[in-house]
Amino acid sequence: MAYELWVRVRGGVIAPTLQVAVWVCMVMSVMLVVEATYNSAVSLGVKAIGWRPEWRFKWEPLAGADEEKGSGEYPMVMVQIPMYNELEVYKLSIGAACELNWPKDRIIVQVLDDSTDPFIKNLVELECESWTSKGVNIKYAIRSSRKGFKAGALKKGMECDYAKQCEYIAIFDADFQPEPDFLLRTVPFLMHNPNVALVQARWAFVNHTTSLLTRVQKMFFDYHFKVEQEAGSATFAFFSFNGTAGVWRTAAINEAGGWKDRTTVEDMDLAVRASLKGWKFIYVGDIRVKSELPSTYGAYCRQQFRWACGGANLFRKIAVDVLVAKDVSLLKKFYMLYSFFLVRRVVAPTVACILYNIIVPISVMIPELFIPIWGVAYIPMALLIITAIRNPRNLHIMPFWILFESVMTLLRMRAALTGLLELSGFNQWIVTKKVGSNFEGTDAPLLQKNRKRLRDRINFPEIVFSVFLIFCASYNLIFHGKTSYYFNLYLQGLAFLLLGFNFTGNFACCH
Image 1 (tube, rainbow, N blue to C red):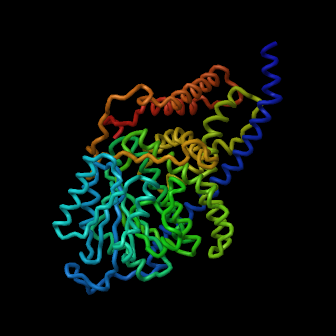
Image 2: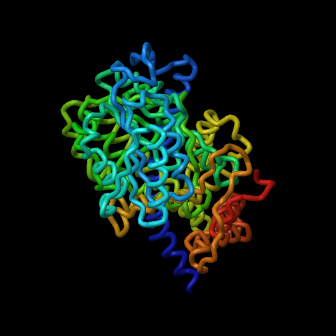
Image 3: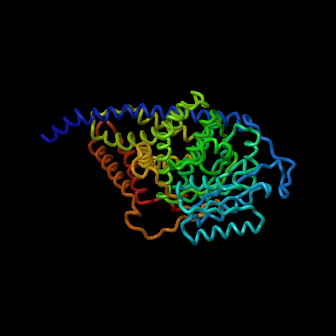
């Protein structure tokens, strides 16, 4: 009788409800694959014709200037370096900024130190004094509180009297090390194109071969820069500022309303508001700035949660502003609301988690549920091919990347819902821990492992989800029905289990 009752409930209530969810996921999957195909096609087209930003925007090198004596041809530039207890990397970023090729009387390096550790704060101040003794115009700025976090620090830095004389502002996070010619290659775009607000460079990573975790992270960021940023720049001259490794026009920041701390993605917030004012952005993929990838699974999760949550929360807060903006075309509004926000910030994490980590596993116990083969096979294969095309050198990492992204969808969906609904913790800011790897190679050090409590060493949500997936896989293997998902489910369950125990692939065989 109990089994008959289960069959009735399963067929009359559970299956129809899940069937609706399946078709919703199918629609979202189509939205996702169309968006990815469009961006990839634009990116490939740009690469095929050898398109460069110089084709669309004027660029001329600065000539006839003596970098030692200075020249009026060189505009005033301020380099901002926000940091918070950055013991491992503060020397790297400050040193790289102070060694930029630019007339000494036309550049100001501003270190925005929000450190709460007096020892670290003292070291940063001494480092600034050391560069001052070498003739560098470097300013050390602190605040009485961390209100607004990074956005608050950048805003406070722009309020200084010496900052108001600077036409352009370059921003670098504490672990970023620009090449000496960075300003010489980026600032001319702003000088010769008065409608351009931002020049964004690409990130390079000094520790991407440290572990399997950093390798799959590099794939994620490579796709972001090669496809999403490239496509946005080449079509609508709009994309999200990455928060670092970019140069802003001061007038554009002020016209857009300055830095705001209403979300955890202050960089994206400023970029959208500036674009609504009619400003254009340039992405220059040939200019790369060395930086560091999170070395632990926990650090990467906190970074991704902040970005995913902040992006969805910004969508909620700025959608109306985009709709009523007067200086933006209808086509660009559609691109910003549908492609940039809805598909990338909400649809992508939601459908990936619900369909492949919840509905498909449950379907092995509900034979009445129908899932189209094109939705669980053809669309994922298309997305895989799109990603592989722009990462041909990482084909051997692709299986690990798929499993890793499967685990990350759980976190990103939770983050997106938290930001969209403004649930508890939606505006929480946690700085990503760095280790100070200032060289490239496989010997970059990892974070030192300190003694932690059990709940800090084990990720319980991942462990619980791995048990669920392994149970569904075993059920499918024993009670073989119309579907055979057990192989994929076992792999997914194993991925959740390994990351639940913080395994990041640091062994030699994973290098």
